[in-house]
Amino acid sequence: LLRSKINCCPGLFLQPEKQMRYMKKTKYIRLVLITALLSSCNRAAYHQGTGETAQTNDSTCIFGQDSCSSVFNFDLWYYAFRPFLDYFSIFYPPPLYGGSLVISRSGVLRRGFGRASVKVSS
Amino acid sequence: MERISITARDNWQEIVEIQGFGYHTPDVLYWDETAYYSFGPEEIDGIEKATGELWEMCLDAVQHVIDKHLYPDFHIPEQFAGYIERSWTEDYPALYGRFDLAYNQGQLKLLEFNADTPTSLFEAGIIQWLWLQDFNKEMDQFNSIHERLVGHWRFLIDHLRSHTIHFTCLKQTLEDLTNLEYIRDCAIQAGLDTKLVFLDDIGWNPEIKVFVDLENLPIKSIFKLYPWEWLIGDEFGPNLLSDKNESLWIEPAWKMILSNKAILPVLWKLFPDHPHLLPAYICQQEMNQYVKKPLLSREGSNVEIVVNGIRIQATGGEYGMEGFIYQEYFPLPDFDQNYPVIGSWVIGQYPAGIGIRESRNLITDNFSRFIPHLIRG
Image (tube, chains in turn red, green):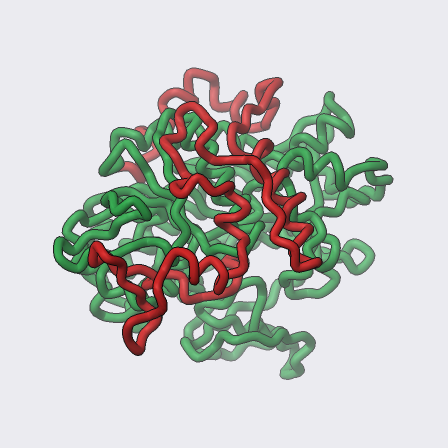
């Protein structure tokens, strides 16, 4: 079972459990996405208050093992924080019927998840 | 456990922003380094041990709910019972959870378990560690969150349905996105290929009955920062049952049981008088002091504290239609009217570290502040 402790994280337990418990992290924490991207996101997000749609030059595609995130070659901030209706009008036609779903030329339906408009934090 | 007041770093906002922490002051101060909590090693041992015990008890509780078919108590739609049970019996992988614990006068009590979409992971795993490097490099912290995340993703590689795993959350929320991107970061470091697709961009191909991303490629394994109760209630919710790929959603559907407050009465029934549990019931019992909690509320919404028949504190919100549980009131420790809750992380199957949120109220809500901690030498 994945829920069994025996099978979990074999690589980690080359070190004694006692050493893992308290942090004493490696000297250098490598974050390939966060520090480069989201700090930039944050600076850009400040512009939300002024109504400007500032962009950065960051892309989630630039990192080695990441297969690609910015499928439209948009930067992450623009993808994540562009005002919804603005975003909606570019990528999708208006809804075809009563619900909120939209349908593309390929017949794929979208906007069926994410009806909640609040953050998830718990 | 002690609370020590200190002076914040001069340019702390700039420091944490460079580290990728953009929601340190969303409306009011959230990251607060004008104090820290100090623990003795034996206290940390106790928190770690309690977290491990609680996790094992939770797994037993899931089995019990499934065996007894208690879904109505959890307000879980009957049509999803089989879906949940398949995710359990086929052992769909889970990544993490956060127990919220009250620690007062040597007693450690479970308040609730954020098993599905816990946040504050990034500040607990990274930001408070980097704070400690500036504050005192010689001190330690109960925090192996980062290493555990990378390690557990590495372990899960062979248990996913695809080498590429999608990551999804809502648009327009920096806090959710940061937590999601941090988890994705760890997955990348573990050797996985990843793709980000926001929730409303997830597609459904009705001809072949599969979920697809923005490139119309099938989604077979996906990490979501979005609660199960919202997912199944959305327009695509029923499609989860007919998905031909039987996509792996992480956290798995069986976390619907653990993330529901109705798990608290189940735990109390299975493990009565356990030192880390509080009496909890689906129906109100003869308790002099209790906390009334909605089954699905988030960030302390719609919670009431009643002492001797008097409501001493209550919060508003949109929850409660789904029902309530009643848990014996256990006061949080009072540090000059700062009331801390310990968020104790389990990653994979192991306790992995803590993050502390502190509130000015007895109910920890979305105005609470994250306070770093250290272990006394």
